[in-house]
Length: 229
Length: 210
Ligand SMILES: Nc1ncnc2c1ncn2[C@@H]1O[C@H](COP(=O)(O)OP(=O)(O)O)[C@@H](O)[C@H]1O
Ligand SMILES: [Mg+2]
Image 1 (cartoon, rainbow over the protein chains, first blue to last red):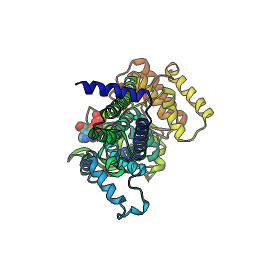
Image 2 (image 1 turned 60 degrees about the vertical axis):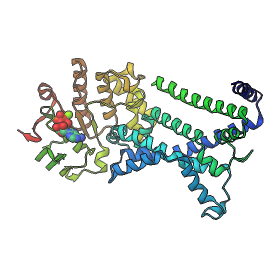
Image 3 (image 1 turned 180 degrees about the horizontal axis):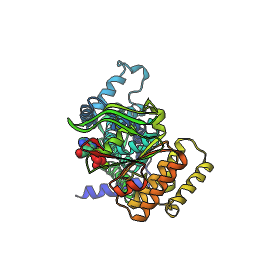
Image 4 (image 1 turned 30 degrees about the vertical axis):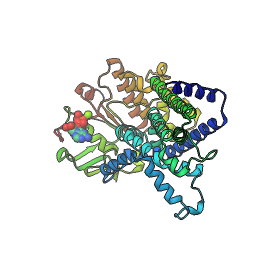
């Protein structure tokens, strides 16, 4: 039991003394997951809103496929991107494998269906009514999509936070395409896995605490937004 | 030339909801549609307004099939007003912003309307948090603010007090006179129909009865 307590104390020390390695890892994690979330949201929110209100053939099949994709295992996404970016792969010439860019690509693709699915579902249930009001007042399609986004803003923020949570906590995709290279592609989740297997518990615990703290913070932001409504 | 409906049929899950052979609604008049619950009144307005396009038959205005140009000059106020999550003022401002009316002009137009409908003191309140009567008035203001030629109203005074009802009725009358608008109003209230309508249509079981 003693080593756990010791690990805890050492972990806190690393955090308060602003340990360079630890903070580099934290910043890279936040950076990659934020960018991925932003890219995925910017595309999937307008698209999800549009498809939610649109009536088209095979809509129920589309819903099903989308919901299945929402839970794609992260290692699968990592594997696919790694194969595409590998030296002999179709995009090998870009030389992106084991770079933060590759990690952003993989995470964006991983969370895209999640953000899209959540938005699509929300729009399917509550978008049509807003769309109809927009139509009666003379709004065109773009104006209506924008109107729906504004009206459902609070719910959409929750979706974005959920998306970010998934991005920052996943380990499979960033591990495979990033390779957990020191000072280059090492993020919180991949480091925890590594430090743990190396027996370096203090760093593993320190990063674990930070990950928890990030989750709690973003979720409490959502909570306070909810209260406002 | 009027609003003309011919051979209109509407089905929901193979059940016939509307079956109107011919219906002429006079231009620049107020036409009341009355009938019991569930006979298809709202369905008819949804079709005229272009929200519902899944029907058989022809709806024309001025001898032309309904198109974008006509839809832009037409509006429908829903039975349950759906106001936006923004202030009353911004709710009424929305259609003017869509039409790129400048800020000063918008303000002038809106101030006049909210004065007439006596909603000046709630102009900063959030639209989606208003009471029934208040939201009916705001919804009417938001609909007529851009001066549509065709005004469709689905039970605009259901569940509200007499004073608000009178106010809304006189505003509808005033609007029709001033803008030479064509107004179609669904109402439960026969007396109301007799008070403000030039023509009255009764619908029963999806058909127009005289
Ligand atoms: N989206 C819908 N799906 C299936 N049935 C509907 C739908 N909307 C309306 N109906 C049915 O159509 C009939 C007419 O409805 P409606 O036009 O709203 O009646 P009214 O406005 O005269 O009270 C009702 O029997 C109603 O249950
Ligand atoms: Mg109705």
